[in-house]
Image (cartoon, rainbow, N blue to C red; front, side, top):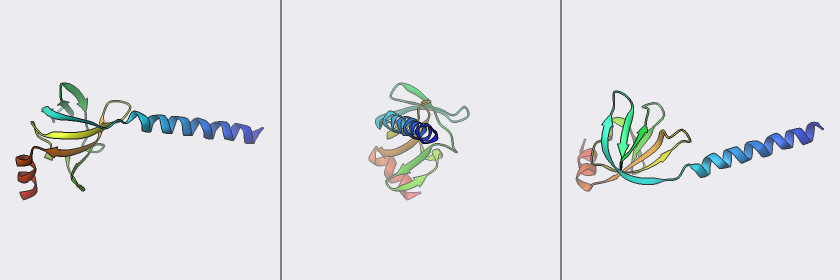
Amino acid sequence: MKINRLLGLVCLFVFFFSHSLLAQEVQTGSIENLDQDNGFITISGQKYGYSDQLTQVFIGEQQVGTQKMDVDMVVRYTLDNAGTLIHVEIIGPDEKLRLLNQN
């Protein structure tokens, strides 16, 4: 009885874990607005929440802080199930990437 119950819980855990991974679709868009005081960002017309503690921002393989995000940047991003940014990769435009790499 206990083994069946344990197997049931493990299967349930695997289902929810795999479902949450599938929900994390990678998207691409352009930053249109940053409301840093309130923790919101608008990317291609959609408003998302972000957090300095939760959101990871990258340029290539290097992790940088959320303060590197700016209006008109092109980003590849992933959301959690609540619609909060969890992963952002700055991919353009080239002139903004050059400025960031120089600093």
